[in-house]
Image (cartoon, rainbow, N blue to C red; front, side, top):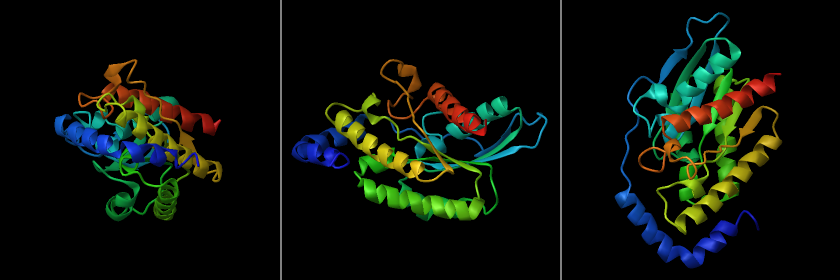
Length: 245
């Protein structure tokens, strides 16, 4: 019942939500994917064997909201990991603006090379929330993606980024913001449930309080800024470093 609550609340509000959605899309600046290579090495001169990081996800992994790939979540996570572990980190990002998990299975997964990695970051949820995917369908698609990623790259650990808190997105008006926030929270609970059942998976809650600090959001009020990516990267890196101790 709790997982279906967003649908029950949205149904009587549907005409208003559709109007708000159209208006928001019309007035929100369309930001491009970031420039630059989607691969690199953080702290290349550090001693020790390098860690290998791959990220797959929606627009933040593609660098939407920042100018350069070096400012996006994968590169910033690599930098945070390298500083915390004292080792170089080879990173690669596979992301697409607007991608759902189902899209990733068809379009992003074939791009991921079949070779082992130490850390796999999986970051989805906003587009599946907007599409109002059922939690059971979201979990099914996520498990299919994770199973195929495991087969391809045998990650030592999988960081499941929490679904972004859409109730804090400045670009969204109320009640659309409130309803999408509830939907995102439901999908995030589904993600947490998957992580509880698999020791390889580490769910990392995403807490970006853009309402208290607007500089965490990009100019479109929808994606994380460079500062937001730094904060997010530190959360993910700390979760990885903690599980190693």
